[in-house]
Length: 154
Image (cartoon, rainbow, N blue to C red; front, side, top):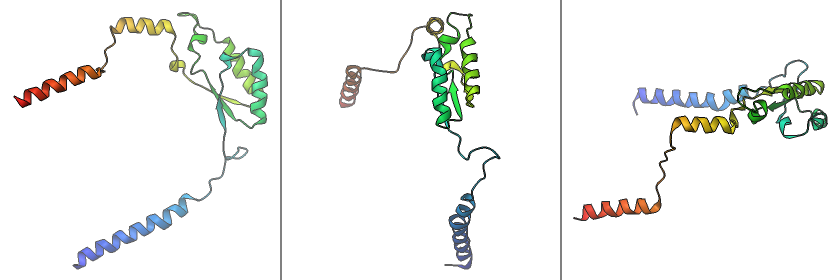
């Protein structure tokens, strides 16, 4: 081995040594939580639109007792937020957010795009035309393969 190769090899060993020993020791340095905040914030999904409104305080009291810091709401509630096209009903959501606030539970409001209303889907499909898929039946695949095999045999 020539001198240049030895230097490169030593440099590589030194870099690996630094990565193996120095970097992990730095990465494991404890981060301090913000003053007055716990080191780990816990959250949960909450679907107040699925339950009678009278159940909300009970749910939130249980969450507060379990030290849940935040909930996410709304991602499946489009049909409740807009029961008919252009008719927005969000009073129930406002009451749910205020109830969470009373129990010291923060709210992350999701966009309801996970469950668009049936009417929107129907009108979108009407504008997009027929659905096309890339699926083929096993019979169609077998027929194509058989034809290809016969063509190469001839």
